[in-house]
Image (cartoon, rainbow, N blue to C red; front, side, top):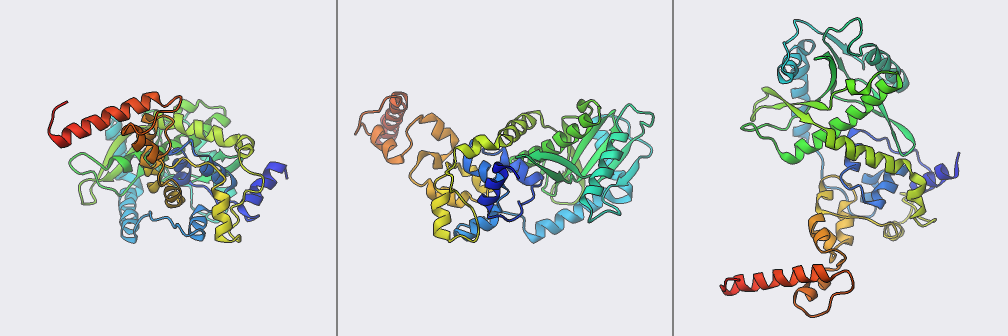
Length: 369
């Protein structure tokens, strides 16, 4: 075992690393500048348990009702060998609906054998590459794909991959959040898009490793959701090229785990057997980059928010970037009121703050600027 592997094991307390999935990998892209998250995820630390241990448990996740509804919707869409799904995907891609398509469940028969499932998925998917001798429509359910995350191979299980349709592979994401009057929750669509990008990247790497053109995997993922509040499915295309760029950049950063560890104290630990006070002190030694949208994606967000209280970063990335090097809220208020002179590099932010203060005063007094 290398010294890097030993150090990562020491950080998580010597326990096996937590397995990544598409949701956790997608969440990595939400805050690529956060060293704390990158180190903890690189080490495979169980962040939900860590958050509970230090007294700041995560407060997000699906309700039982949402999970039950999601399973019922997915089963409905995949019924009859995916006939309805095939129609939805073909119509959304603007191609004739095939009279028939093969349906292969890559999870059948090897449920508990991850290695066997991955080998079977790789063999059948690479063998079904568009442009081969058999180019009829085919749907693959529960394929097991893989990605390198911080030097470790992790396995991913998409809802579905549609192969040999319109001459390319298309990743299909089946989600239970509704599309109402043609619009869905932008945050949920964004989350689905980055998860789809994870699967697109994994499938492209699989094809490339077998000597095929990775571009045979389309950057247009197909998102299938219920229309309005019924369970009638509707399909949309989601272009994930932007998400792919962000994902590659963050995975490349995590691959350089030695560089990340160089910025971390040698005695840093997230060992869950350590006392909470010691864990809090250890976490405070590693730089975080908190923003309000972390609350929907990172299990440690409530601790980081508590830690960031009084800092401009807690107000969001746009505020932090607009204020340049002014890190403390008290300093922002003092600059706005003209109670102190700006430090070198803070002149532009100070001018912006004073202008905003004048506009606020004029608005309160009813005097136009």
